[in-house]
Length: 536
Figure 1 (tube, one colour):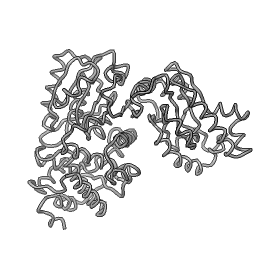
Figure 2 (cartoon, one colour):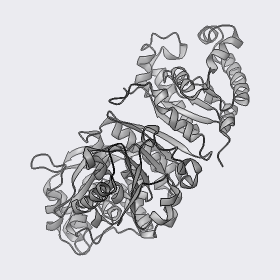
Figure 3 (spheres, rainbow, N blue to C red):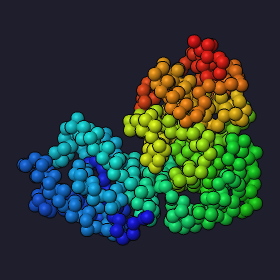
Figure 4 (cartoon, rainbow, N blue to C red):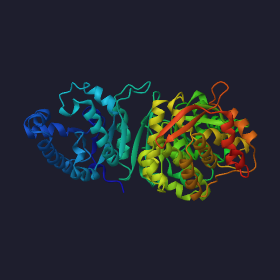
């Protein structure tokens, strides 16, 4: 259950230079709380600055005093406080244990940004004078910050277009909402140059009073009405758990709904119901519903906000984030669309338990794809057969949102998210969107991409992972020529050439790679049952 608001302080953690002291003051002002800086308390106890202490006696005595001060602080503060901790305070196991009764908010700044903020070696901080040592400290501490974080808030980025308040005040409402959710709930503050939004993740989230009361919806939207676009297969189960809805438009969750005609049906339903630009859409369902509702939100009266409540694996780990919306044409998938960032994403992994096994397994392919892109702990867990839990969902969301923050409009690095999708989409098109679920097609596309990447061992490993979940590793009923024709219509082509995303190793994925046509044909042929000889 959620801990009482009065008992859970917001405790800001993160590397030096992340801006914790400034953010704590902003948050405290917005929430009517008291800002407390542990470094200032440590200096009061020492009777001198931390820099002077470390210069004269080294780091050991300072860390002992810091541990004592922070433990006392965490024992006595409550929800009326916003605490900023020194960057190395989390090195103490006792401090890490004490953080468990509070909400640890990781202010995530890349080390280069932090280094510049601290004067690029001209800081009065002894640990911020040597760049190599500074970077080594960051790499050593980052896993601890990630392990402890209940909320992750990127810093060091410029405010999105139109934002006038400082970061701490912009994120305050979402952190206040997090305090009313279960103790295991997590928050990711997603950012791009045009928008920012919270991602709430918790098992059982949709059954929390804070959701029903709309506290996970940005305050600026609450003055308007919500209009729900929902998959008719789940609206009866989850629709009444959400904030009040002025109107409900039900759609089929299948790819056949994601058409211009399907969008027109929603537009007209919203117009008949009197939806205005001061209102917002809520999308409840899987990737198809999110893409379709997001496209309608982007275009209805030239744009209204949308809040995503994803209920499938694909949507929870991938499609609900990043603002890509669209519909299909008979000629190609996602050929008509718009970029339209959500206003919030509300994720309850408990909804995945009711999915049919085939759909759940097909969606897991997006987890596999994201893990290949991310590498590190996420790849190790997924490759080791780890279950799809809150940690994996949150890790996938962080991976995608970080990539989108670097390249919102798909001009460069964001294209890595298309790993497996070029041939996967072509397989869907060549089979008329009838025979393969999206994830099944992407799984086949991953196998093709790994062949094109000259990674036979990794391809075999991925093939075994797909088979272990009953996913197809070959396909009947189409031809190399039909798939190649669909590949040629890929919307990401440059001139006459379709570029591919290739894998060097998990965590090292390269977009924009030209591949000879004969190799593409061979990779497709290898997927077609009974045609493997053509690939050799």
